[in-house]
Length: 234
Picture 1 (cartoon, rainbow, N blue to C red):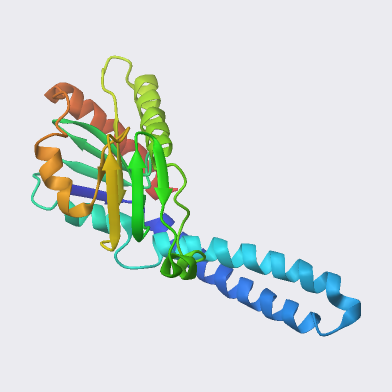
Picture 2 (picture 1 turned 60 degrees about the horizontal axis):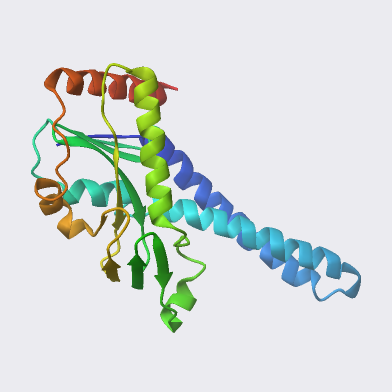
């Protein structure tokens, strides 16, 4: 399998995450110092809010871009063994993670939650636990992965149809929980929900979409490669 990754974005966002986290901690420290001075209480409150927001922004970037394995690395490892007709693009196209293959076009939405996560249709719930409470500020929010995955797939599909109106292909959304500590309870999910271990088997079986014609596959890859190259050269 071929993999094309936006290394510039990874390096930039990882560095930004480090600076933002350190800056947030520094501002929080300044706010704590100001809290001991009654005439600076307003500054203390402002610093606490600003420091918290900045630290959270930095932490989000570090978790996605500054740690190993990153989400794109987990996805790539989960699909080892596919031949060169399969091409994974990370942070280069209208959807964050895109797999172009002879059997279909896929978009991946990743989540790094741990603990118990339940999904019924398009409804999601995460079970409260002390461990989750301690991690609440160190991992991204759950949100609604089904809706976000469908939106990403729709955005990519619309973009392809605008660029290549002669190619009839629809991106299929997939939600992937990349942390092995997650416990998934699934009941008729609105979109496929997978863990990395089951990725290859699903793609070879239940996940097979409509076969993409070789000529259309070449057009799609040319478009994706051109778009990726322009971003990497920017």
